[in-house]
Length: 240
Length: 220
Image (tube, rainbow over all chains, first blue to last red; front, side, top):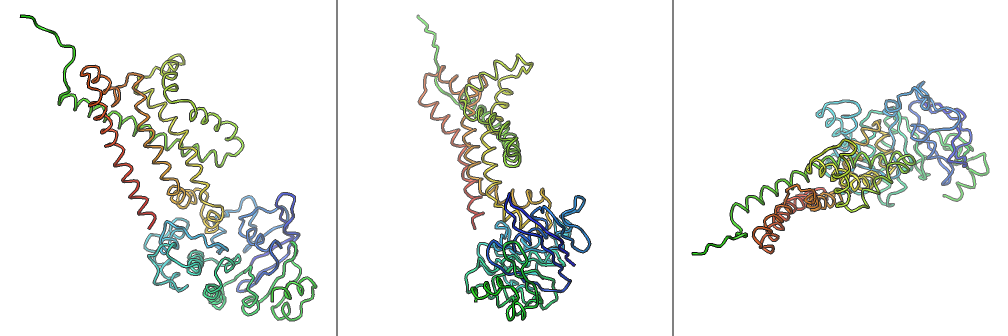
């Protein structure tokens, strides 16, 4: 379980998260929507400790992410993350991209790491691209490679930071399909997204962020059908 | 019968071997300085990148001096003044010290550029997989950044190899000094300098060809 308590985050004088309280249960799919600059991506960075926080706490399975004694590298193995830009390692083949972290972080043997990588690449539909370098893959394939790379660490949670925003429209579908597949398999997911169809169809809950505040959270039918907050309604009216 | 004593004699095979040995000395002093200098320069580059203010205030000005002052001045000053502080090195030792620091000063900026060529998003992606800072540096930053600045590093290495000719002013018999000795004896500057140039070419060309091949392979 991910517990977020009174989370505040500043970039210099600018406060981007203004006291967020949120629990994400295992097996849940939470979509986070909101305008650019509303703090939703920063929330993900704070959850896996890529950004320090100024106040509050993020607790993952009982461990405080930002506490001094926390082994953050170990904790991050539970928190797979997929970014807007796929950031595949250009000097490694698809197989090596996925096998790298299991090998050097988890200490798996080369053969074990490659077996994991192969199975995860097949999982995301890249079984025929094992020995291809990322430069020869499309954006959608590279993003699926990034998903496989994160899954290879056998995370408990997956954090998606606008995983389809940088893709050409025709490539969005294949990545969303992969995310749907993970949701169906019971993966706990927090998805920052602009894909309202995905948020409505796949999520258990949808959270709307507005200027650093979680304005509203609820089941998709409530958020999309009967939002309580005026800001949520305005935002949804604009993106539809 | 009058016998004349000749002060000068022609270029012969032994002279060619003499130049060959000198070329090996050029190779040796260059390889040593470039290797140690590259490691040191990598370390300095990392300090400049990570140390930010402290490194900018302390290390950067020192490296600037070594980058800006002509190598020949550095060599002469070091060779003549180092003994005052108890560093009594022979011409080879002095040459290695100065060429190493000079290489390190040039490589530092190349290395910093290499680290900075790997963007923050890429490094965050690596860290998000649970990699430690050093694993990220070793498995992501070094191979990606290293490839980005490899041509610049090769440029520095080839430059330093040619600049090693300046160690001749300290009396170390490398290729240029050997050529000067032979020119004095044979009075055949055109021939000898051509041979010396050919030796320098023979030392540099394989390096630049191999580098080009590596770059080509990485680009695939």
